[in-house]
Image 1 (cartoon, rainbow, N blue to C red):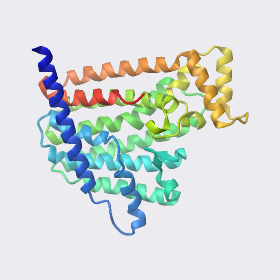
Image 2: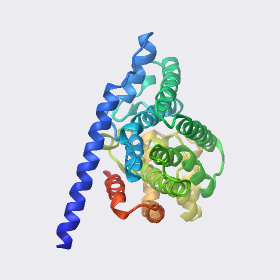
Image 3: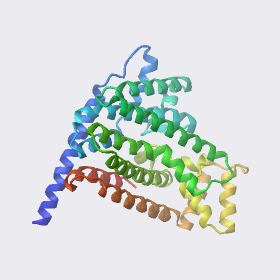
Image 4: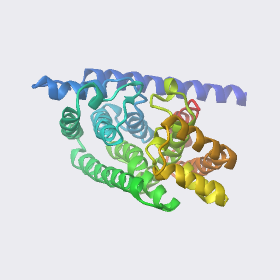
Length: 336
């Protein structure tokens, strides 16, 4: 009987998740991303309407549902989060000189850099237009302002770290908290705000999002090195080619003996010309020898345990949490 009950909970959760995904996909598809001049707005639509995980809007809707709120009232804030996220991607791809995003040409590659800069700005403005279309407009807009400032801070740290001789692991973790985790956490908090949740529950849910966001970014660090482009949608080893000091790189320096450490520093120094593919292969060989992937996976698991404890602390019936728990389990099972 208990197994049957668990199966029923599983299928109910999946049904709810799929329903919200379909509703949000339809809502995004119906949103107005057009305008004149067309050259300004076409890249916005191209980016936001691409098929993606819709992670941030889904977290917003699931958080609202968690507290028994009106999910319809959360759809415009959710759309704002997705649009703002895509604004950051348009600009990030310019800075990273990334040719692909979700397996498709990035905006600056498909159009040009100037268009990508301006269209990214237009996407940001459209996000603020969306977030204000809710009864909780003042609160949700304040959250969007705060999180976008933090994301910019995280991106600046990321850029600076590329040119610094050394970066500590705590510094790196703070960078990814700002660059990635805060937007996931704010998506959850925004849904809670729309639902009228109390401040303590908002904080627990925000912390839940931070912990999961940290785990997701560590997973992305792994995927950049070990995933196929057809799965991940980005060029494999891009972080290595760009000398990004990821968690894997920093742990490798920590674990390496003198010879391996010297070799890794030399590969990242750029002083000796090397073919990018050869560089990626050499760095990955060092990572494999040092067991860096496994160490990073252990750090991910610790963040996931922390996230579970934060969700446990939210003062709603466990029954209300099953949709969000199941959704995060699905995300944790992403292609490796």
